[in-house]
Length: 364
Ligand SMILES: *Cc1c(COP(=O)(O)O)cnc(C)c1O
Image 1 (tube, rainbow, N blue to C red):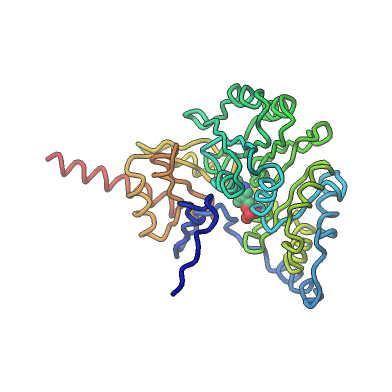
Image 2: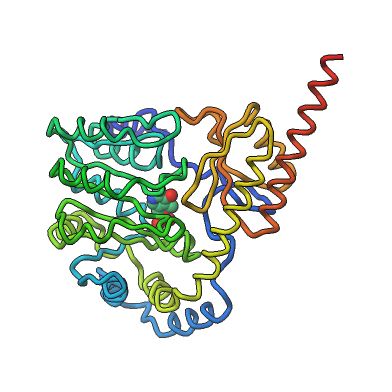
């Protein structure tokens, strides 16, 4: 067989994104909503989809959905851009504000997609690591952007996988300190109940990322959006794939957004369960749980890799970060239904009890 020549040099050694999805009874690994869209909304989606002409290209900008989102946020259509999941929009930001000779400021540990996109677009990635408690080193970030060579920054609020949101006062200071594009990734803002959207009125360099994948149970449909001032949206439109948001996803998004109030009880339940799981984790000896404004809890412990396996053997899939840089010994458990959360807590408690018993035997 003839050989193919090497791909682009920036791909060397790059590992494709792996969500580490495995069959399980309780999927607590991907920060999805544990509940699917309800039967009535599903029926409304089916009716809407039945009217979609499949032989025609979709509206490239999804203007109906754009208008719904704009209105709900007190903005205009020109301030909203839909994407094939938030992930596509993150790539568009790297294409439009990154590139050779340009720099991205990252605040690790955070969502790994940002650094991967920088690499794919030959953008230099400058790290300002978080502190030991995963809070942002605000003074270091402000000082770093002050040098003037940063082209875009991403602040994840709440931060995945560590859990807490960024302070609004800090984001405003950051926006004032630089003309770099500051993307605030609010993929989980429905669980933190906090947004920096009001700052759009005064800051052209702010963009906000949101998604339908988490609070709105639509990870399967691939829909995300950016809120920004019109000049930012126009630049993103230059790099985006024209038909990335297909007609079916647009139809699903319209129905779900029109019915968004119906998701509120589910969001409230997740927030309440988060409190309950946090309390339970705090009673477990040897487990350090990090505060969360989101729909998961990050925690660290000894033998985290073995704990992950123990939970998995009992049907509970959580996310293993125990060998990720800056997250040594950490696991992340998405908040599921009360039953799933009980199975998770029970599994972890049993693992700790068995480890203690084993250690006691070894000492005899
Ligand atoms: C889930 C997530 C997104 C977007 O996910 P999509 O499913 O592509 O919309 C963006 N940022 C963070 C931090 C996320 O966790």
